[in-house]
Every structure is written in C-alpha cells, then in structure tokens.
Amino acid sequence: MSDKTETGVAKAHAVRSHQPGQDVFRSVLSENIEWKPFPAFPPSVRLAVVVGQPSEPGPYTIRVKVPHDVKLMPHRHPEDRVYTVISGVFYIGLGDQFDADKLQAFPPGSVVVLPGDTPHFHWAKSSEYVTQVSAIGPLGLDYLNPKDDPRNDKS
Image (cartoon, rainbow, N blue to C red; front, side, top):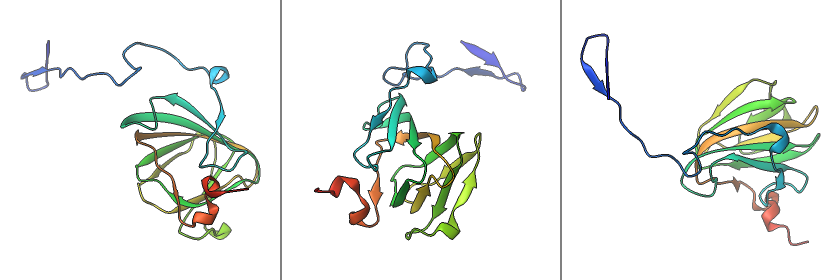
C-alpha cells in the first residue's frame, strides 16, 4: 500500500504492532472509570487506569483525582509526562521543597508537559482536581523525602 507524496514519490505505510489491549476500537466513558487507591499517593487520592498497563513498558494513560486541600509532596517520575487538566484547578510547583509561592495554577483544558526526573509537587489548593496523565511506562514515583512517601507509613 502506498501514497503519492507532494513530490510524486511513492511512500509505503509502515505497519506497527499494537500495544496490548489496543488492537480493537473501544471507548472509555467517564462513568465507567474505576477509581482505586494507589499506594504511592496519600490515602484519599484516587487513580484510574484509562489505557495501557502503567507498570509495564509502553504507553499508558491514567487519571488522578486529588481531593481539596491534599498535597503531594516533592517527588519525581523517571518518565516524561503530559498532564491534561480534566476538572478543577491543577496547582503544580517545581523544586525539591514544597513552596506554595512556586505553585502555578492550571484550569481545565490546560496541558502541562513535565520532563522525567523533574522534582515537583502538587496541591489541590482551591478544590478537588482531576488530571489525565499520558506517558511511556513503567510508571515510577519517588519522593525526595522518604518520610513523605505513604508506602513508608508503618502506622
């Protein structure tokens, strides 16, 4: 199969293999998203896998729902990430110390590109927010201060 380009040269279409679970058309409706706790987040935060397998190599899309006034302390992800704000206002700051003065507010519809290994923090300052995150897995999340990591809470 080929197409003619503007220069008249034939161009072949490369056939790519599909990612797991992405070989047939499907849709994901908001009301069918399954929200679950995630061990690396504070207990009230929820994560939903939309597409892919975040724990495996390959593309994935997740949604993260953070209730009002919850903070995610300084952390980093090894993978590059693209955040799309679905609802609420997404406050994110860059740096290895939580500093409310460094927070930037992004309203629904905003897209935030976060390079891998960038120290950052979040705060649901004004209300609950939901972000959609697209990246290439496996997903990683490392808190800069181990005391901030809910996975280390022994209580």
